[in-house]
Length: 255
Image (cartoon, rainbow, N blue to C red):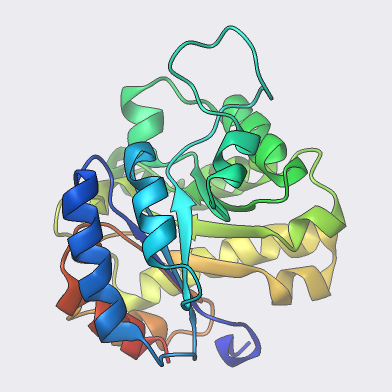
């Protein structure tokens, strides 16, 4: 199955980095290096406080703005939380849900990932759903079971029509921020497993069309190899997205 049938999506996850002034400087530098690159979709998922600045800076360009999380309620007594409609009105088009750091540090569960995903989809946002196994789970040989379960539960109650606005990011937890990465073949194999789960739930065509990113320390040096694999349709980029030059190399590799 060739990834050429699907469009690559390169999404930077800035995590808890960049004040608004620093964000403006970085996004200006990124745009200067990726403008004219129309062979893939480019997204930057920025901290909440940076959204207005970045959204204004990329208006009318190929770069789209994403958020790093969203609450599952439309409004209410949820101090410190942000709703999908709030994000949308600020210019956000994409949102990450279920990132391993949210699961590890903030009590995210498969159930809350599903609720967040559905809330974002109902608001018209494109959702990047993160799935991935711990090192102990990989060493125990249960990677397939873990990512299959996470994928199935994240998509519970998501319609076929809504599925068109879902991207799945395979991010092995053991490779997040560690500098380690799965081999091209290991990453492709797991992305293929995720694709088969989607196909089993929604049909063969839906499985073929699903955009599946790799999110485990993709960088300027390994991007080309990973993106050459049949089941990998882009990347969810962490540290390398904070360096305009490196991010631009990854975007170029996705062309």
